[in-house]
Length: 331
Image (cartoon, rainbow, N blue to C red; front, side, top):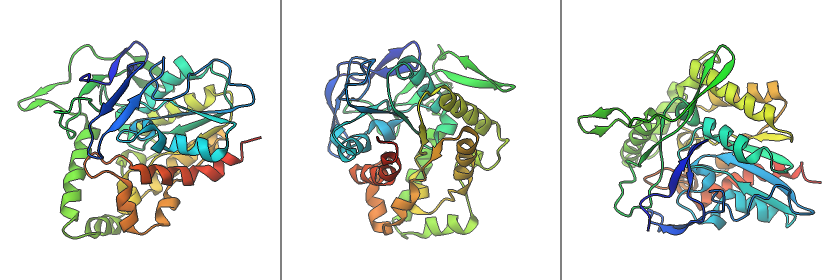
């Protein structure tokens, strides 16, 4: 088994190695990773023209879209394809560890010229932090790897100069060293803190969520102010993504599970994404109501215990939330 699932790529920094067929150890029991000829974890080959009679949807996001921890058939993209009908083809461009910046670059490199009918953007809300970073935490196929300290791969990033996006290539130097080793990106640090908090919360179920809800805490804090630099960068990336699309766009930000638990206020990020949807005339889908239909005991089963990515049940909830919106675009 290879020590890594990824290889360097001149545009996106890294990608899945093409032609993979490997089983990856995971707390959920392991999962099979198969990739196509351009390094997508997708069972379809991205032909320039869509197959005759097909309605083709392109989906971009990070590991929540790629389905880290799950077999292909359990991911929401495959669930949508089956439930929308046998004339619908969904191409999954999910890239674990990526920011929305890399997802835009992947669209420009591979997706924009593919004939398609709908673009579905699913930025995990923490992507706002990854856009600032020069290295990305990615899953490993190494059975000895520590899931709380995934490998870091160099990635490109944008900066905002005035209103213009300026692209910076991946760094050639490794991340800054600390006495204990490489300094993880801020989003990874926050993820580790959340895991610690989860362990504490097990002793008093619901207390942490209740306390945060009382204080009205939003996360990431960068969504609180429309002039915050990290949000202005994210907004510019989304505007470029939607502006370069030649088809309708559905924007469906993926919440953290602290939002799903009700412990974090979702209003800040929903307000910012809502502004983008209004400015670009695309559709915004809020995935949280489908989770809130379920009791907390069910919502807790929607994520893995350690890596906090969605389980098969979590992906089924995503599919439930998206299905009625996507149906409206079908002929």
